[in-house]
Length: 286
Ligand SMILES: Nc1ncnc2c1ncn2[C@@H]1O[C@H](COP(=O)(O)OP(=O)(O)OP(=O)(O)O)[C@@H](O)[C@H]1O
Ligand SMILES: [Mg+2]
Image 1 (cartoon, rainbow, N blue to C red):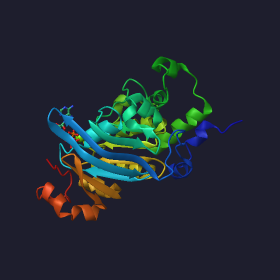
Image 2 (cartoon, helix red, strand yellow):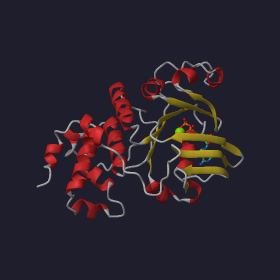
Image 3 (cartoon, rainbow, N blue to C red):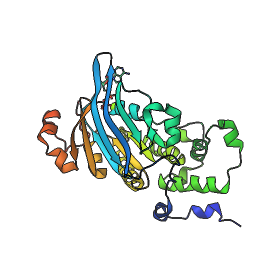
Image 4 (spheres, rainbow, N blue to C red):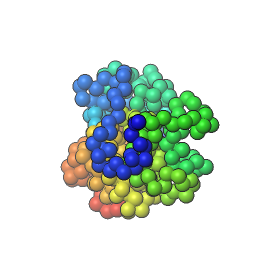
């Protein structure tokens, strides 16, 4: 008899985190320790340069924060990585072997790059558990997925994710009744079901309460190492909770890079933020 899945409920999140590791994608080669290479990327919309000779290197397993004023090109950069926008020039590699510029959006997702948009897109008519189940569906239809008997491994995976995102007690509730923060965690859980190697997260704490923000910081910190994370965020209190290396994007290029203290004390960064405090909560750098 295999392990009783209900016993998994009792497994502590910390012991899960110790065991949990995303399996390596077969085509992903990170032997040089770098999972993402962006070099000389240019994106123009009509005559406007949204991304300008952008260079960015992300190490495998790191949690990189990207900050920068509104319109700096942060979301556009994520659009390039995920294949939504093709640059006019430059190179983008996922590991040593996967040329992202020759791949379409589904191929990039399949290769192990997951993206979390700002607005949560969970299925409100379904329970929390079923949202996680369909996230694993691949090409199967929702109907087929909900009818199919989850196997032991899938059930264990769902329970592990429920523990990780703190929604075990809400598993049989409709996703419609979740708070904004809980929906964000559920969507992160849905992404994790697909075992991404690289996770791109755009403004995860916008609209969250302080408690939800703290929990999100804890969650993202716990994912680093097993996954690589690129997190775009304006809220400096939140960035401080998760920051190791911070890259500042300005007018489509990297203006500065370093730890939080180095970046905050960089005169170029201070100038760009027009003297606005980068120590306050919910700094709006517009
Ligand atoms: N599809 C598009 N067509 C035209 N202009 C666009 C398009 N997408 C983005 N832009 C412009 O490119 C610039 C960069 O936008 P982007 O959304 O990447 O900025 P951002 O750094 O994510 O800003 P925010 O912090 O406000 O989210 C902006 O001036 C934006 O108006
Ligand atoms: Mg944006």
